Structure formats: C-alpha cells, structure tokens
Image 1: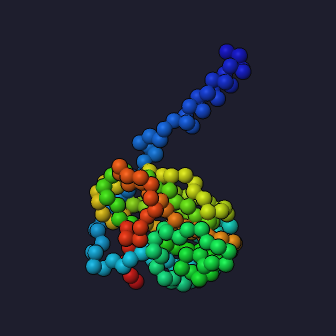
Image 2: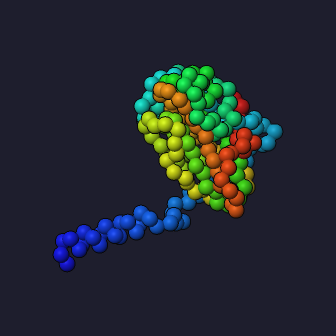
Image 3: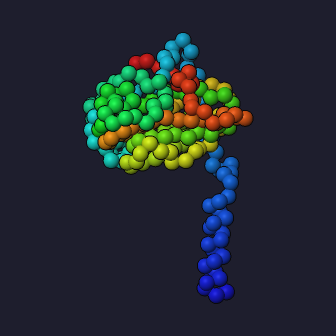
Length: 197
C-alpha cells in the first residue's frame, strides 16, 4: 500500500473514532454516600474553605491545601454562580481575585443517567460519587470543557468535592443538568447540602 493511501486510511479511522457517539465507557458510575446522611443533620449548600493566593493551575491551587491558610466561608448555594462583573466577589469569598476554594458536600440525584455541564472561570476539578468526573485546568473565561455523563444507581445523596481557583478578572462556577428524560436546565440550590463542622 502506498504511503499516502496508508496515511489516508489511518486519518479516516481516527476521524471515525473521534466522531463516534459516547459509549458506555464514557459514563461515570457514581457511588452513593454510605451511609446516607441523616436529613436532619444536613445544612443547605456546599461547605467551602478559601485560600487567598495566586494560582495559575489546579496543581498550584492544590499545593496550598494544608498550609493552614484556609478560612471557612459562607456555604455556597451550590454550583450556581454565573459570570460576574469585574470587581464582584468570587463565590462567597468577598474577594474578586486570587481566590482558591476547597468545596465539599453532597448532591442529590434521582436514579438514572444524567448529563452535567460545568462552567468555570478559572480552573475546576470535580470528584462526584467517588469518581473524578470533570476537570478544566489553567486560566480561561467562563466556559465549559464539555458535558459529562454520570449514572446514579439509586436515588439519594452523593458526595462531591471540588477544587476551584479564580486568578484575575471575572469569575464563575455553575452547572447545568439534563436529568433522565428531561431538558437542560440550571441546577437548583435544593440538590446541594453539607454536614456542618
């Protein structure tokens, strides 16, 4: 086979693979919280601790964890913070720039397959139900790195942890969801909770 024909065949194969629909391997299987948290002990929103240092990557942001620089912030309503104007505070920090957030809590899902689309400015990593489901590193405007698909085996609370940083300018951290058989919509604060302390 001539070299140019082989190159064409490989190129066509790669294009077919890249354009193929998402398969079962692309579905993140979530593990529910075990045991499920007592509803009476849960508080609304997600717990958050802040560090006020410059980060240009998630690696930078992670490197500040455990430096005793954290300050507990007002709980987040969830991933419900749209794009800000210059000078507006990032999340509940009160600071508009040089913000690193360590986020922890629970998200409530009904059983089935859900599509999630996070947006952030700047970097974001999300671990949901014991699985890293999303990462968008480095500095960027309020955009998504693409939708992800998760499968909840049962209705209930699923643990969530996120690492987020905002360097300069505007900020955002939000999530839209398409539930089984539904349409895309923003997430509502009622699906987020945390344990105090």
